[in-house]
Length: 309
Image (cartoon, rainbow, N blue to C red; front, top):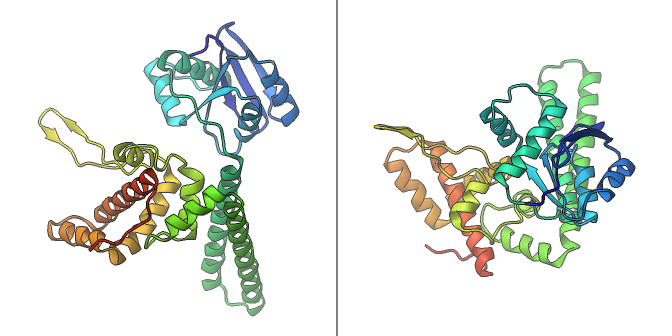
């Protein structure tokens, strides 16, 4: 770990920074020019730590990647738990920046790999696609509660426009994937697996670049599909999944709905778990985990999916 550590608390308008080596706090406007100036003034071997905040961290990450600076993008829950463990109950932007810097120095978390710009764009389009799907659902719900013909026509027009935007998003995501041969090959390999469609493959490509580089336990934990023990003394609690990358977990869960019907070994697994009295959701989570482990092995061994009865 570098002796020059900078904790950054991010918001849409500004970045509160704590320089751990000097014990100094200052602010930077969260705009490209000011962030670029801040990054250019960092020592060569500086380490910057900040929370993974949706949208607010994009500017800082891009500038750090351009300058080839090391940074740590930490889960906000981990940072809060660290603060509580230190007895820091107050929460302000300046306090959070100091806590993050202390966390980097004391825990020495692994640095984050540089962001792949194409994967980042795919992820951005996937976010927009999810927003459009939710908008379509909301309009469909409103349609059931409205009687006036003029309003019904307007909602139908809105739904049609949203559907066109979803199609456009799909096309843009597909174009981005095809623009990089490595990603295009990965997409074809993923889509050959029953249950893994275009959205699932795009999500795995954008949000799980570690696929094929970790062992089965690590990849399951990364996706939040590893069962976690809750035992104490003689008490044996139920194993539950927790944490991980939510979007990856969601698409794998949806993929398991088809995989447990069309992949023989998953179907057998489903039937065995049913016979032992497992709940339907528990079965689907187990199949989603097995599906992820299978995909991870495919990429690790550079092999395609094979249907084994």
